Image (cartoon, rainbow, N blue to C red; front, side, top):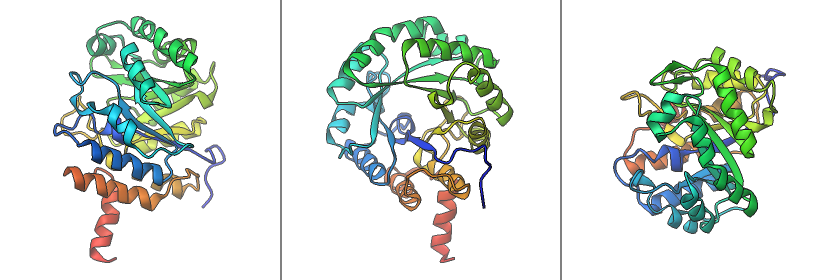
Length: 308
């Protein structure tokens, strides 16, 4: 079956499981398990892996030991290993850990910015100027992430023009890539099309990636809508690791296996070994004792167990 001519022929998957997926786990995941997870993802062909976070362990205890993780993984030269860096201290740690790409973050909602990072959107972007300048000096890639690009848990609907304003600030900073994130997973394909239509009016499609959560079951539809707008970079988390902090019991990141299954069905290349990804999902959920949130992963496991 041929895919729509509007869809990209190849998609880049940014695997966020080791960082965004694990950071909210209550029980500390041992360093060696994080390293093994990243190594398996590397071997499966993931081109970009969000591996660490250089945020104070006081705020995110799960990310303690990120320097050790980055020092221990078996790196491949063609893979980008990313880390979240909230300030200059985090940047210096990321630089020392030989991070390939740093991730900075803001929000499209003023209320969310105030409640989440205790400052305005403008102030949050200003804080990153020395970080980005240092990264540019040191030849490190910079990715900017915009939370609540479709809706906010406090203000409700976020208008496309609000997203566009933050995109312009991120572009002025010099970001190499900008994530448009549905932090609470309530966005719909129509909203996705509207936001990308707004920002693609002044910026190239190659600059953007989609980061969708599956709280309302819309993530795959939203990815498809973004692809129809020309977007070809998407974030996903192996086995759907990572919950949504604003909706109790809700799923968080879209599962990598589900995204890969859809893309495979559309004949869109990713360069990732699908079977290996499914096995990695089983490995990490079994190891940390967590249910597999991937529908594809669960279906294939059930099929295997019944011998069908």
